[in-house]
Length: 145
Image 1 (cartoon, rainbow, N blue to C red):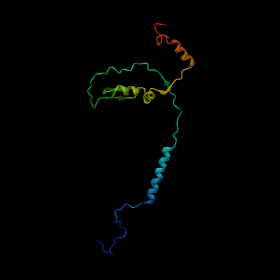
Image 2: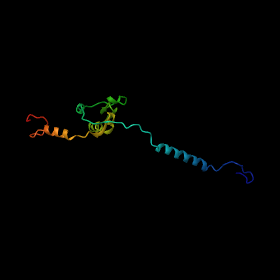
Image 3: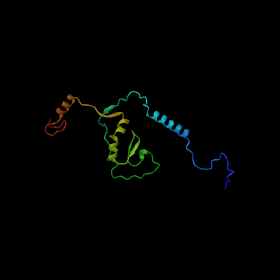
Image 4: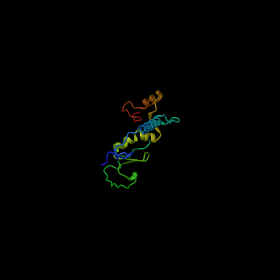
């Protein structure tokens, strides 16, 4: 114990952290500056023009892996892992329903350079298609016509 007359001068023996007003004001200013930087609008270049959606020109192969088993190893490359591999997005999807959702989805279509908007049909295009539909069976270009 310290005698009443022998107290050490200038020694902090309370073991509590003291509130330093200047330090916390500086931290608050730095945080506000970071917030301002983050919220500033970033300079944007010209908007990217993407092609409208179009029909696939290939057949989606979902049946080739039906009923087959596959050994899964942790060191296999993505294209050889279990599931359906998308070479455009370089991802593996675990089942056929999710694979169809992926290839019809926004991320995949953007990777292909397409927007998610379909091209508007003109009146002439619609009339042309309606003229080609068979009155008897509803098919386009059938044997009845």
